[in-house]
Every structure is written in structure tokens, then in C-alpha cells.
Length: 419
Image (cartoon, rainbow, N blue to C red):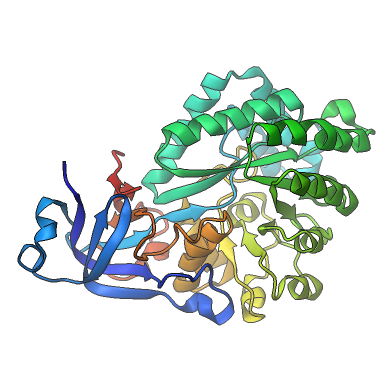
């Protein structure tokens, strides 16, 4: 058995960071360190060493037992960290796609029983085995595009039994998938049909029944709320987050996708790890985020798919904020987990430079999952989640060639993954 992996003939090793840097903000997001003509040594699932090319076998006899991978001039990047997905779901919703083309809004589709409620019905009728099988296909697909860590939310259950079913599925995926997976409880994703007109009672159900049983089983790392117009109010969000915090769940927030909802301010007030979507972000919201430990996370796939306004990414970074980019992979508003495409969207839609967008998809995405001390950069001691590309002329080629998969080889936890 090989003692490790030695990647040789790397055209460019990208995303190098020293220990201790958990995220990049403002002007720092444009800093992306790389080494030309490099090697990378992986041992015991961790990054052991890296540097410019050398006479491997002669200068270090420890390399003799390594598996040698010739990158053939391709680049090596830290794997993408996708901090916002709804990857566990049953079936698809392409008929709503046609409704969108015909001009129906996200809210109009939801009022007709579509949207999240449609997915809730499908999930209720699916077995855990079916959900695991479908999700594994999606996980394999996103790994092939370079994702090594992913957050997965519940929220298509909308009752205690089905929310637990989703979280059990996520737990099974954690056990069998090579990807690093974090679980988020999102019972407050929408108000189920049975509680229309009685939203406060559904909030009580989340607080008094769902959260205690989920916490007792250690089923979720985070708690999330869809705090926006037509969904949950800031006051309801505060009640839910306080209950989650009481039981040890770190907050994350869906906020300001549809309007200036106050969700960003609530997230900051309760020290949310991230606030996500943020299409409607103004001066007050930026001021609230500055100097906090909350990661603003943009989801360009949803804005693109729903033809919504774009979040003011350039303004946010110029003010000194960090940004993460995530896929929002879900069946209704962003049916793709391709982080290479999200990287391209960050550049085109948000006018981020390739360097800024890459930091947003790697180190800052890892931070938005509480994982940037382990993942998101080429750093000695971090988990060896990396991918080798096909030969490329430049770093800029990664977002530029948005229609093709540039990944050649995927290594997760120090193991080559069969794609």
C-alpha cells in the first residue's frame, strides 16, 4: 500500500495559504497565491508538503513508496466548497420551469401549491432508500466538477417525521460518500398547506417539537430559516434561531432574496455563520455585516434561473466584506450543483475577478460551513481535497470556458476518486 500520493509536473498549484487564514475579505479576495512547475505531496489524507519541482526520488527517499500522479502540466486547485444546497429531493420540477418561462413569479408558483410545497409532497411519498440513491448520483456529479465539501439542508419535509427522514438521509450520505457533508435543519423553509393562516402554530411546532428531537439525535450542524417576504418574518426567525441556539445549532439564514426583509440584520444579531441569497442588499445591510464573523453568501444560479436582480457583489467587496459563492442546488430554482458554472456566473453576473470568485468558491465557502480550518486552500496539514485539471493556459481559463468540465482527476481525503 502506498504511503501517500505525489503529484508531479503540476503546471500551476493554485490557492496556497498559510495556516490560520479562515477567510478573505475586501481587497484581500483578489489575492490568490500560486506556484508554477510544482509538486504536491499528500500523506495520511493530509497535505504534507508542496513546492517547485525537484528531483523527487533522489532528494527525498520518502517519496519512493508514494503513488505518483503525473499532472501532465495541468493545474491543481483546492476542491470547491459548496456551502448552500438542497441536494436531497425527490424528482424534478421542470413543469414549473415552463411556468417561469410564461412569466409566473416564484411567489405565484408557490401560491398555486408549486415550489417548495411541490417538493414536500414528492419527498413525503419517497422512501429513504430512493432519496439516498438519487442524492448519490448528484453527489458523484458535483464531485466530478470539482466539489469536495457540500452543505445539504432539510426543508422539503415541513413536518417532524419528514424533516427527520431528510436528515437521516443526509446522515447516510455522510457515511458513504467521500465528500465532506454538513447538515442543516431548515424546517422553516415554507409554511405547509395544513398551516395556512396558522403560521404561528407552525413556528411553535418547529420550536417545541422539531428542534428538540433533532438536537437529541445530533442530526444537524446548523439551523436555517427562510426569512423573506411571503415566508417567515424577522420576529418568527428570531424565535426559531433562539431555540436552535439553545440546543447547540449554529444559525444560517436565507435572507433578502425577494425584498429587503430584515433577514440580514437578524442573522448578524444572532451571529449566523452565513447569510445567503442577498439580492436585496443596501447600505444598511452592508453596514450591519461589516466587522462581523458572518459570511455573506451569494447564489448566482438561483438569480440566473429565476431571472432576478443580481446581488451587489462589487459594492459589498469594495466596502470590505468577504463573499462566498454557492450553488443553491435544488429542483425548483437552481437545478445544478456545477461549481465551475457558479464560478463563471460570479465573474460574469457579479463582475468578480477570477481570483475573487475562486476564493469565494473555496476558502470562503469552507468558512460558511465552519470548515476553513480543514478545507478550502492548499495548506500544509489541511485535508487533501484537491482536483487536477486538464492542461489549461491560465487560471482565467477556469471560469472563461464555462461550457466544459476542466477537471481531470479528483482527490478527496487523500484518495483518488473513481468518477
